Length: 166
Image 1 (tube, one colour):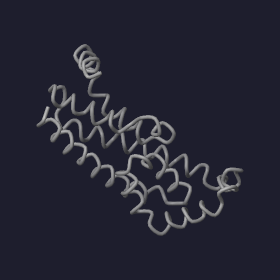
Image 2 (cartoon, one colour):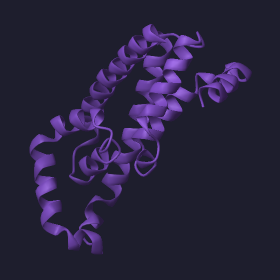
Image 3 (spheres, one colour):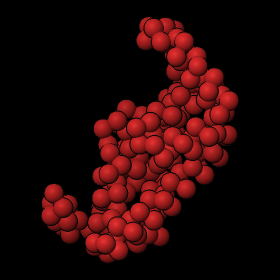
């Protein structure tokens, strides 16, 4: 698999750097994030870094931007369906669980944004739940931008650490 990726990178140097924001967006985007693994992003970013296709100074801001766009797409979906969500049959079936989840997000929404950014299994779902819960866009933007920055810096540290072993 690595040889296929390396060969593609070598033949498409001008597009290689676009993998970082695309994969960061994909793993954070609602729905798509359930299928795009963070492992792909770490692998691609490490290959870009160790193959000298990109520097950490390029990878980190691109990952931040992709993650931020993915999170905000989920937030906007949640904000759009928010009022109607409770009337869906699925929501009615799990009404008590959803009410408890919403109460938790409203009480600890800022913390949920930060924790959700670092937990792959729920990364693409937290922004939707926050959007449904009625968070303001500005509050979400500020908290999520900080969470994505910390996450992108952590990604850079992982890539640098893996690059040292490569």
